[in-house]
Length: 333
Image (tube, rainbow, N blue to C red; front, side, top):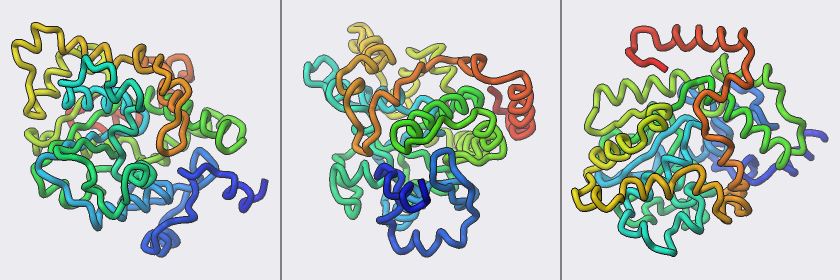
């Protein structure tokens, strides 16, 4: 398959045939690397983006106005985003928890909590020219590094919840997810794990370098503890009740004594669990607004699954990079 045929056969979320003029003009000046699918990453403000996502980042930097009442969920890709979207949506809309028509029963969390920079998600609801289409207070999401956030996010009083996962599980989940896309949407063979691993370790991955992404938000959480909440996926898995209560307090909507006594915390955790969400019809056979199959967002959700994929040499290499990158920061995995 030649380059033109491959571009034509790509799914819409990977195509770059409807980019803004600003993005088209910028791309030729940016460093380029082959990505894990069949297109390229472009280095912008120190991080790697697909052209379509870069287009959304540029547009949001110019036009998005954050409100003080906004909540922005930020994650590194494949670090528990689907779970946290479901939890935050259910937390902020908990009066609907017992409803037989709860939105989570019929829509994927990614369609309920849109990504700021993913134009497809926004266009599926309303025109990108009006990013304030959602009812206030808004719950939004992004993978954008802290340095690339719209200025209005940093200048407002909006809350930022950041979730990250240890780099070994992050890599394995990202590699597995990418291979699902390669097989289904690009008719390509699976990406060899050693090639993808080398790319990840060099910092060349979607929204990478991973370590720089994590460190920016960790430092922001230390400087702005009332506005940026930093959470590790492993801690969430170990003590989900404690962290759900922590989220509620941070967002200014703590659980009441009546809610606690009525089992609301456990009710939300059960509704948003991997087991519950992955069995829903919409997540087994449905597609998200971007065209991706919802089942791809539910692989295992386990902590430590990397031991089944990484060789001792790989483990030593990524552990050395992690120790070197995080040295002196106070952050550990």
